[in-house]
Length: 63
Ligand SMILES: [Zn+2]
Image 1 (tube, rainbow, N blue to C red):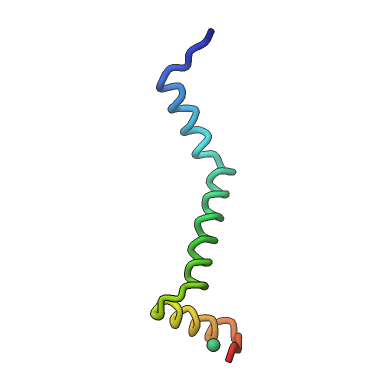
Image 2: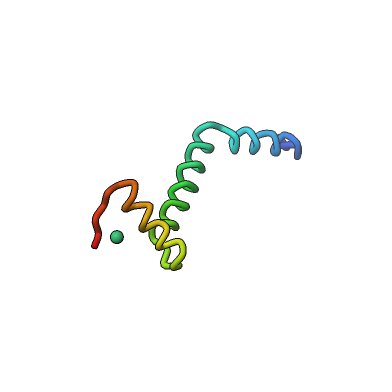
């Protein structure tokens, strides 16, 4: 029977957490969450700012 020491488990979990695929996945998930939140916010200040940024940068005519 093998027992993993506490530092060995910490080292392994740090290695997995800091690996490139995990970092890329976390980065894409969190940035998508931020963009989604800003674009679909109903809070007036954020909504109006995102609205005018969309008009000024993408030239989208929504009204
Ligand atoms: Zn508009």
